[in-house]
Every structure is written in C-alpha cells, then in structure tokens.
Image 1 (cartoon, rainbow, N blue to C red):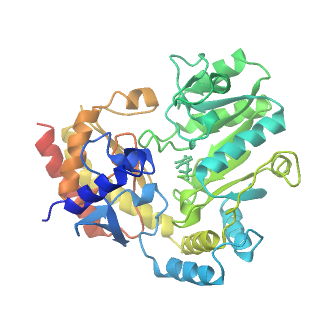
Image 2: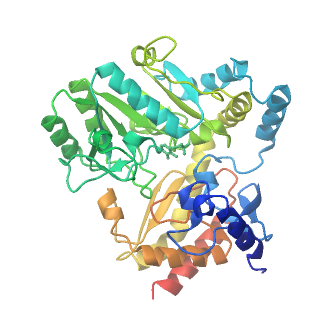
Image 3: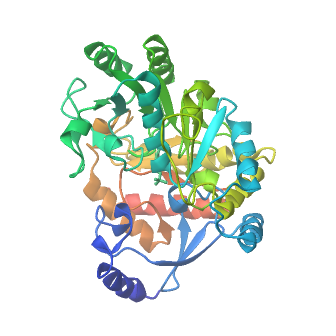
Length: 430
Ligand SMILES: *Cc1c(COP(=O)(O)O)cnc(C)c1O
C-alpha cells in the first residue's frame, strides 16, 4: 500500500494557511499524533484519501451521513436546488419541505428556526431561554458539547456547586460564571445547583444521549428528573439533539426515552451533509424570536435552498419502513461480533452503544459521566486508532468521540471492523 505522501504534503501546505493546518481542531490528529488524512472522495460507507487508500468510515462526517456518501436521491435534490439558485436571502419553498419532515419527527417543535450550524442552534436556544425566563444562568453537563458559543464553552470546575471556569481562553469570566456545570447522569448534582441559585437559572441544556465524551447513554431516570426539575422551577429544558435527532429514531432520543424538551436543537443529519442547524420548540418561547419578538437572531445563508433540499431528501429517505430497526440490527451485530474480545479485556475496556452510536473506552466500564471518561487510557487509544487506520478503518481521532454507523455499512464492512478490532486489541493489550 502506498504511503500517505500526498496527505503529508497537503498538511504542510495547509499549515501555512490554517492554524494547526485545519479548520476544526479535532481533525488535526493532536490526540493521537501523526498526520491527518486528506480525503479525496467518499462512496457509500467508504472514504478514499488523497493517496488513493480506501477506508471503511465510522466517522460519517461526525454524524450527518446516516445514508453514507453519494446517495443518488440526495445528490439529485442538491443538483436540482443549486441550479435554481444557490442562495436567495429570501424565503423559499424548500424551507417548508424540511420543516414538515422535522415536525413529523418532533411534533413539539411547534415553531422552529433554520440556522447554519448546531452551534447557532444551541446559542439561540439559550438566548431564548434567558429571554423567556428573565434569568441569566444556564446549567450544562461536564463533557457535553453544544457548539462553541461563549456561554457553552464551559465545563466542570472542581465540584457541582462551583461556578463556571472558562474551558477556552477568550471567554469572559463574567459570562462563564453564568454557566453552571453539573455531572451527567447525576440529577442530584443538578438539584444542588438549583437550590444554590434559586430563581436565577434560565434552563438546562443537555445531550439526551451524550455523544461528545464518547457514547454515554442516559440513566432512564436522569432525563425524567431534568424534566421535573425544569417544570417545577420554571426553567427551560433544552434537548440538544444535534447528534441524536433522526439518528436514534425519527423523533430522536426524546421519542425513545419519552421525555420532551421545551426547546430542541437539531443539526448534522437534518442537513444531509450540508451546513444546517435548527432550533425549535414551544410556540410561546419561539415567538420571542425576531421579527415576532425581541430576541434577535439572523443569518445570510439561513434556510439556504440547497441545504434545505439536501436535508429534506435525507429525512424523506429515513421514512422507509424499518430504517431504524435495520440500523439497530447493524449495531447489535457489530456488538455481538466484538463480544468475545471485549469479554477478554473487560477489566480494561468498555464498549458502549446506543443504536448506531458507539465507542470503545479504554477503561473498565460502565462510563456514566465525563469524570470517568477522562480516566481512560488515551495513550492506548492512540495506538488503537493508528493500528485500525493501518487496517483500513477510519475512526474518530480521539477517545472522547462517538463512532457512527450508516445505512451504507454492509455486513462485510462490519465484519472487517470486528476482525480489525479483535486483531488490534490482541496486539496492543498484551
Ligand atoms: C456537533 C454538535 C453541536 C455543534 O454543531 P456544529 O454544526 O458543529 O456547530 C452542538 N451540539 C451537539 C450535541 C453536537 O454534537
């Protein structure tokens, strides 16, 4: 197999233009070392790098590509839309088409706004929650990611009662202090914060299945407790389903766990591979948005006709009978094929899966929160990652990320994955 000479050369060139050579940090392979691959094209469940090497892809562009690369119906929808105009900066019918699909999955998104990223959706959701309640504080969970807006780039301090500490330089301390951090799957940590700041907290934002600290499913009681805490205290519950919406089920994690947020954030899959985010929810909150209300939010490319068409075509394809059952079957199959090797190293490994989201933690499980995830053996993960890459399996280049299955993954792809994992673990676990 050829070396990755072209990727190396492109990375050198990229470094002269972009900080770290990339336009989004995790792409730089910092957590695992080595040179990031530059991809030339994708096809179904496979990626081809610039040196012509083929990989089975379990990143799926970090979640959006639930139908794999190059689905003909999505390409067709994009083609038709772009020929009619790549952007109008004015209303178009495609927006309504996508909105219909979204409300079909999430009936409690009584009103919604199309934006261009998950970051914008979450940023707007907390602005709405603050305006609706007249309160400034927000609760988020350590290890949950809601995009890179200032208020949400805050993770845990030393304890649940502590005020926020900016995880990023450049976030003003005064703003970070308004973001309180609780422990995922620990509703008592939330209750303590609410008791410590009576009448001050606008809402809670949560990934109903966490996908940004590896894959961490919620305890069944956890989401119900958040719902109750919010309802009792006049707080807004924001379900950030940017990953899980239309992935776990048509109605996302909220459908599966039967708990609804007051506001919902969507992104990734609903853009069909194009840049889209959506914030929506209860009408009385959503109608605070300009031009109806006083909460400002806008976007030159919001409701972009090409992105709306790609999203609508994708969500339309997800209505096929048995779609999510098939995806679950693939996940279960992979898990069953991995079971023997996982059992062998159960004292040092933990495989966690929720439908078509999964990850391998290099620590004894179960992992229920960020603190536990952080105790993983990231050095061994890095060796695992590179050994898998060598065998033609492309995984997220960091321990605290989730792998994704798409409808394009074949049994043969999963077989290849299972064999590679078994072989590599045998090699590196000693
Ligand atoms: C990816 C992600 C976001 C941010 O979406 P972008 O489109 O990258 O801005 C927000 N919330 C969650 C849960 C995500 O996984």
